[in-house]
Image (spheres, rainbow, N blue to C red):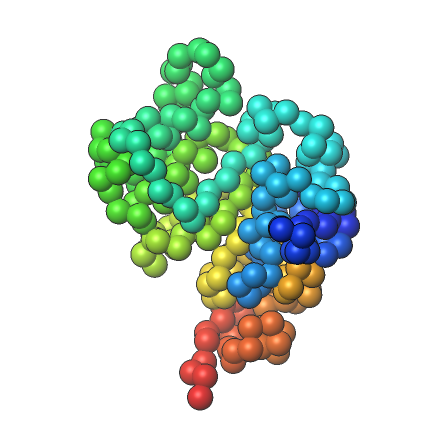
Length: 252
């Protein structure tokens, strides 16, 4: 689905990503981990077309991302960011309906668009907010509405940048369960940045660990999410909980 080859990105003449190369398979749930400032968000921006790399290539389904129009990209990928500040008083239904824009052009919403939006809001438990202004709900509820908007795009690849940071643990788990189901049933590809080690270990098929702009390890969750490596990456002590899941130990 995605091929990233020798990617180098700079901010203000400072190198943020250094020769990053990896691939993402269709129907895979990939989590990107790393300390603050390791280049996680920069990598997502390069993979979604928001940032032009200085060198290296990003290919989506075999085509260089730079060769695709914004409309073509929007029909294939969607992004949910942790920043959900929306100043304009749209209703939540109007916000989710924006996810259909790449397919509508100047046309009005049809029955298919309305059905897709309804399904996305129902799946994220945001249908009850349909006529509520998005400026009048909590940050966690907004994140769920933005997730619904992304799902309304019917993307082949869904990017998540700390997309559950404002949600309570209940809705974080519900959202991840929903996404794992979409991976299984619709072969959707997920690329997620998250800091919760337990959720990363539990829900990911593969994990890519970044530090100082370089890939430290990339492979199955079982290969990457082991206590000794996590200690070397984050300088914290963790222990395994059963087959999948990590618990952070008191740092005494």
